[in-house]
Length: 425
Image (cartoon, rainbow, N blue to C red; front, side):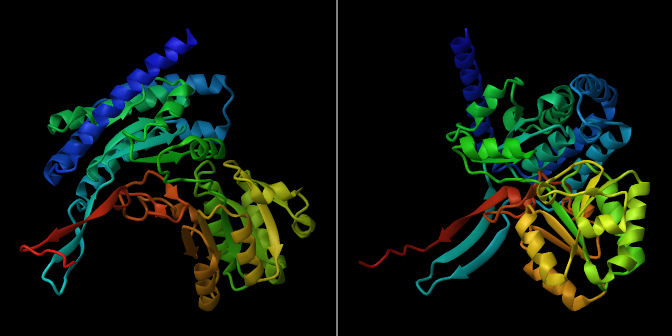
């Protein structure tokens, strides 16, 4: 029975892949007007079918509570009218972006008269594997459409019903605009075996974009036969330099950690210069504790704040995604940069300081996809960057780094125009 089930699943996945490849061929030449029409119609469908989406989400939330998911994970899963409206508005924002497909990146003429241009083109078929957050269905689907791609989506089992309801709204927009229905598809099952099959579909899928916890990312890296554009842990740092404004330090630290603890841009480690710790750190910790944050500090921090829990070595390597913050004193800028580069996940790190020279050194030397000065790490988001939305924050170095938006879902090709030239022997 197990062999028959797997064979059937492989057949279904193969058909899905073939349909996606055919859709990608058509999507590559679809004009902007049709793509934008599909996105705007999808946004309207999200609003019209809001009650259906909330009902589907309620089913997912009930099941998630039964599994004992943490408060932070439940927050990532939950939808409400405001979040649905944000998804709809996001689709409309993406529709308003310039179409990257066909953009001429460079052009030059060779001495032999050949005219050469580098032009943006879609990636093709994008496979997206993500956990919990159903809004990723709307963001990822919309970005792939705008960039002229077809997409195969695999959301987390926790958000299965929510994601399907959202996807149906996007597909409604696709059909209204006359685009290929298979431009957006989702895996037909929550069976984990389907992910393994998907990761081997190199003949149908051009790139895999995983978005989730470390176990998911590690599985994708281990099993994928397809290039991976990875969104790794959000082990983000906030560094209070000796020239930090104390009031600003409180506001930024509170926002960076507690605005939403379950997102990848939430700060997980706070560093503070030892020289000013007595003056700057106590009000920061007081505000965090008052907001319900557990502090895990090194020995010096625990002496400053008796309510802090002693930190272990593992705390400096942990993405809590919860109201927990590890706090450490450092000897200055150089030690802070070394700590961030050694323990961080190369996602987003921020310095609070009034010293521009120190800020510029931090921005230059910290090896992360996003580096910030005097700003909350929670701005690490494609929407906040003016990109409409994002599929994730790429922490790698190849193809794309930082928020993966419309432009990052394209590649390029060279278009060469001649007038009969032949290459000499």
